[in-house]
Amino acid sequence: MPIMEALRRVVDPELALCILDVGLIYAITVSDGSVHVSMTMTSAACPVADMILDDVQLELEGAMPLGYLIDVELCWEPAWTPERMSASAKHAMGW
Image 1: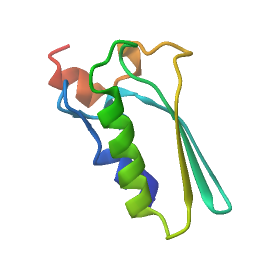
Image 2 (image 1 turned 180 degrees about the vertical axis):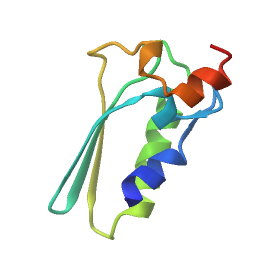
Image 3 (image 1 turned 120 degrees about the vertical axis):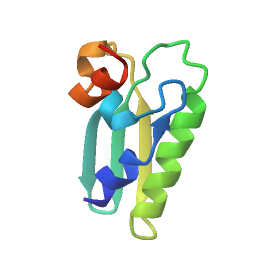
């Protein structure tokens, strides 16, 4: 799926890990002509939040057909926890 491939290219620069592995993506909804992504950050004080959101937007715009509406929503509920991380991300963090 081009959406997942696009999201896999977005890296949290503080952790040097893909945002999918970090568990930042809550939901992806694809409807006729649009993609909606609900996502979070590891902290409300994340200094690179805008960069990550911009990267998600740009990667999805590049992956989807011309004219698709891309909507990236930043959510804080439920709060992110390390349990959302993939096993490989936890291993990379030494957990």
